Image 1: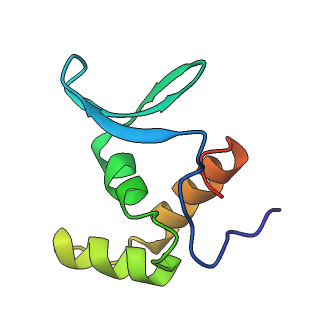
Image 2: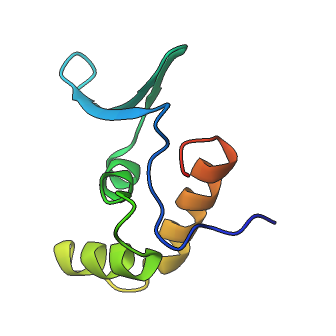
Length: 87
C-alpha cells in the first residue's frame, strides 16, 4: 500500500483544465486525456502541493456543506497516485 504525500500535488506530466467540447474538467497528458467527474475535478483542483489531505477535505466539506468526505477524497487521491496523476 502506498502512502499519500503530506501535501498532494498534480504531477507535472498532467494538466488539469476545463474542456468546453466535453463540458467537463479533464486531465491532459502527452498521450491523451482523462475525463473527470465533477467530484474528482473538485478534489484535483485543490492538489497544489500546499494543501494537506485534511485541508482539502475541510475545504470541500465547507464548500459543499457536507461531512464525512475524507474516505472518498483519500480513495481518489490513492487511485490518482497509482495512475501517476499525484506526486
